[in-house]
Amino acid sequence: MGEKRSGNPVLGFCRRAVKPLVVLMVGAAAVLALSLLPETADESPAVEAPVVNVAVLELQPIARLEDRLTLKGVVAPWATVSLSAETSGRVERITVLEGDGVEPGRPLVYLDNDLLQATYDQALAQAELDAREVKRLESALAGGAATEMELDQAQSAAAVSKAAMQRALAELNRAVIRAPDAVYNAPDHVGTIGRVNDVPVELGQYVQAGRPVVEIVDTSTVRVFVDVPELDIRYIQTGQDVDVRVEALDDRQVAGTIHFISAVADPATRTFRAEVKVPNGDGDIRPGMFVQVRLLRRVLDDVLMIPLDAVIPLETDYEVYVSDGQRAHRRIVSLRGALIQGQYVEARPPTDPGAEGLRPGDDLIVEGQRLLGDGQRIRVRESVTGQLNAGGAAATRAAAEQERGEDVHQ
Image (cartoon, rainbow, N blue to C red):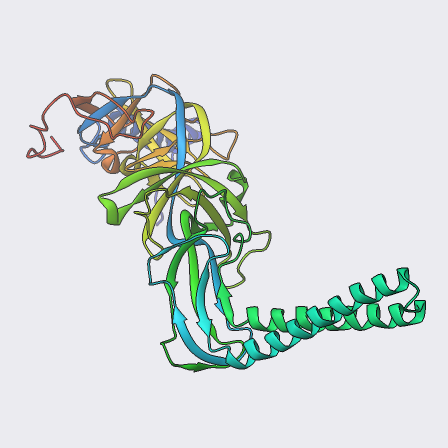
C-alpha cells in the first residue's frame, strides 16, 4: 500500500515554500559575512621613487653677450709682381739681392745690349744729321738759296729718323728690367714699393723674352685668407674690424679689417673666401704663416646660458629639470641656432608653444638630472654660484664637491 498523505493542503504548501526561503537566507548571511572580512595583503600601495641628491644653479640672464667667431687663416703678401725679360739676351748685371727694398723705377737686371746699343747709336746719329739739315735749309730758304719743297723733304726725313731713333732707344731700354712705378692696388708707400723675394737668374745666363727674372712682394701690408662657413656669412661685411692672432709670434694680436668677401661659395666646401687687410710695418708677419681671425658675429641681450651637460636630448628639443626645493620639474628648451661658448649653451624657448621653458630665477638642476622624472622628490645637496659671464668665462663653484663620492639614491 502507498504512503499515507496528509489531508491538510495548506500545511503541505507551507512546507514546500519554507525550504527555498531557508536556503536564500543562508546565502545572504554568507555574503554579508564575507563583506565584513578585512582586505587581503595582495592590494599593497605602490612604492614611491627614491629621493635623488642634486646640485642646482640659479639662472640669471646675461644683459649683453658677444658672440664671436674664430676662423683659421693663412697670410699672403698684399701684392706680388713678377718682372720678366722683354727681350732676349745674356744677363750682364744684377743690382739687387733677395730681401732688398725696391724704389720705383730702379734698374734691377741688365741684359747684354751691344747690338741694341749699336742700333741706337746709328739711329741717333742719323736723327741728328737730319735735324742739322733742316736747320741749314731753313737758313737757306730765308736767303733764297733753297726752296720750300727741299725744306719739306728734309723735315720729313728728320721726322722718320727721329722715330727710328726713339724705336731703337725703346729696344735698348727693354734690355734693362726696372722696378714698376707702383704696385697695383697697393697701399701708400714711403720710399719703396716692396722687397725682392726672388731673383731666379744668374750672371751670364741667356734668357728668352718672357722669362721671369725678379719677383717683388709687398708685405708692408698683408692679406689674410679665411674661409667663412655659409651659415656665418650673413654676419660679416667689408670694412668690419677683426682681431688677428699670430701663433708664430707668441700669439701676438693685431688689428685687421675685412677687405673682400667672395660673392660665390666654393662648391666643394660650401664656404666663402674672405680677405683681411692687416698692417705689417715692421714686416714680422710673413706670408705663409698661420693665424686665427676672431670677429664679432652678433650681440645678444638678456641671454640664459646653461651648462651643456644639464640638457637631455629629446626627439626635437631638449629637456632640463628645475627644482622647487622638494621636487624636480621638467622643462623644455630648444638649442636650434643657439650660441655655444665653451661648456655653456644658450637656452632658447621650446619649439612647442605649449611646452614650458626656462625662466630667469629658476633653480636649474645641474647634477643628478639624468636620474630624474617629472615630479620626483629631490634633496638639494649643493647650490652652484656664478654663471657664464659676458666675456665667455666658465662658471665657478662656491662649494666644494664633497658629495660627489656619495650614492645619489637613499
